[in-house]
Image 1: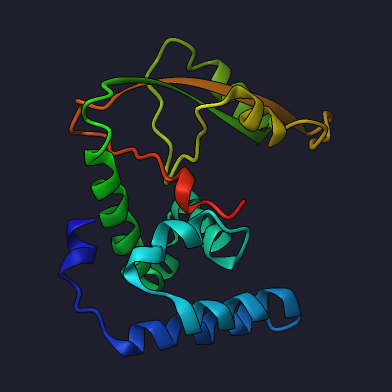
Image 2: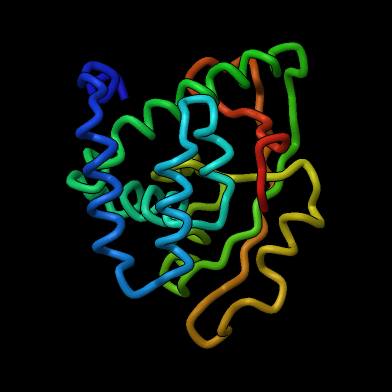
Length: 179
């Protein structure tokens, strides 16, 4: 993250995102409309809002982080910096809360699930941003009836988070969510 923050923010960086994303989604008119909306409305303070929108931003950022795609991470560098900065600001608001219980519903491949089961009792660290909810019902809604049991597994995470830990930044961005 520190490296990304050192790279100058330029208009060309934004233009590159629009161009690459438009090429990638050239046959998807719904995503092309969202790319245009992003181009017209994006500001630094809207990073969390765009991440919580079902759109190309969420999908491509997660893909880049999950697969460690350096080219895609570089393409979205300014956005990732904006999102981390906004999460850091929101995290500071939680410092008085201390311990939170959060939930995440996720569909995993059978292989990912088996690997996770072998890690029970161990620390796991996801590549990327981990969207959660304070409400178990919201987390369950993301997995209910959405997987092919032959190849996938629904997983419900219960996460205990201590806001006093400085090594992990998490934030309540419910007010920004468009989902």
